[in-house]
Amino acid sequence: MGKVIRPQRKGKGSVFTAHTRLRIGQGVAHHHLTFAEREGYIKGVVKDIMHESGRGAPLAKVQYKDAYNFRKKNVFISACEGMYTGQFVYNGLKAGLAIGNVRPISELPEGTTICNIEAKVGDRGKMARASGEYGIIVSQDPDRGVTRVRLPSGSKKTLSNKCRAMIGLVAGG
Image: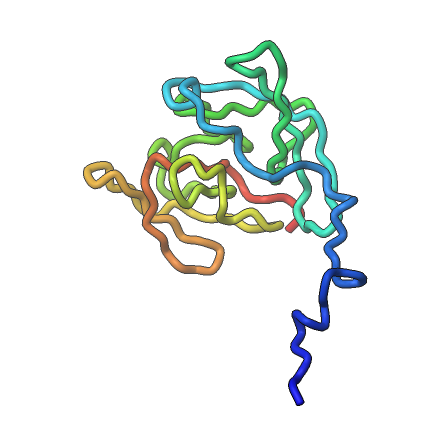
């Protein structure tokens, strides 16, 4: 006699399905990397800060002007502690050093608290996104083009200094 393993028991669905009807956005990520971000900056405004079911950290709905079409784009990101509705956030190389702004980690000084860190250039933020999480920039090596970052687990990771990160720590900690 064979044994009924868990995936067989779960089958097509029934009570084992994910509860997706309360989700807000398609995904939570930085604004996609554009020429304006690589060379200067783009400005967005925080339209709303909201709770998504099943997620500990609040989400911020940030609205940007589309550079290529006449429209506005809404992007959902994990909200930083201190972020508020109506705040202007800047993404890019020449964005200021302020809470909620997104900059390449090469442009941030050592000891800066960061969150929503990209693991690879342009992946729109994969690390330190849960509530209360943050990383710290440990050291910069401009000759090799890398930056060492201490992650929430305590491990240190070497990343390309072109990877982007949001300044501050994730709200809801």
